[in-house]
Image (cartoon, rainbow, N blue to C red):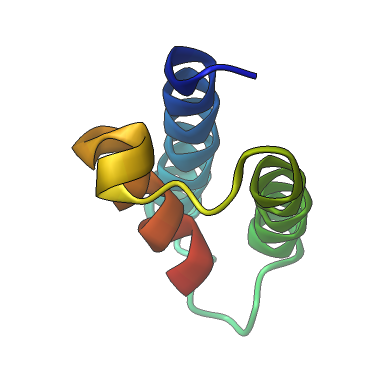
Length: 78
């Protein structure tokens, strides 16, 4: 995987998280415990980020660019 592919993948992962979060907020169900749909996104993103780290290393700003590094850090926090 090259740097551009990593940036694209991390952005897709983050966008999936944001979209699901917004969907659950609109339904009024996000804050009723840890929503299973949100957990599913987080588990999937965690596995994918782990694969990226194993193949590429952690996507830091100097290694993968600001956009990818920011997306990776947000995924870690979630």
